[in-house]
Image 1 (cartoon, helix red, strand yellow):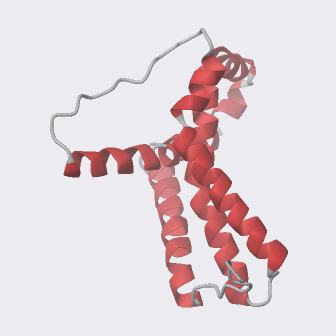
Image 2: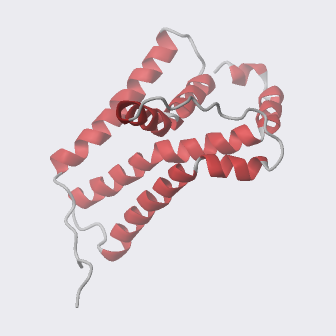
Length: 165
């Protein structure tokens, strides 16, 4: 008895290009705005993009929660929490870690069991990996916030000309 399909067809190329196009457009728009309007260096732009993309899941969850519930309090995230910082950082992004694992596993399983048989499959695997980027960024930012002294030390050790790229 077969419980799982042996072959899964990827979505049509036209449907796979939409999330990729939106991602590239958003990235290009933010880089342009930060360079032209804010006059930021490349490192500052990369940090802002990374921090902004890390908030995608949290913002979407808050919007959905606000639409379907009433009277829930606003929970403030702990700042500079030193005891068990690593475990707290991981527990605060457990949903994001689950999404990262699922999306990477799906991409891996598609490549391993079906391979790249067509351009549709190749683009679909890229879409799965691009969809995992905000969740990876959220996990990274959470871990970085657990150890702010390390990040601050790195920024202070960086030469001035590299800070303003």
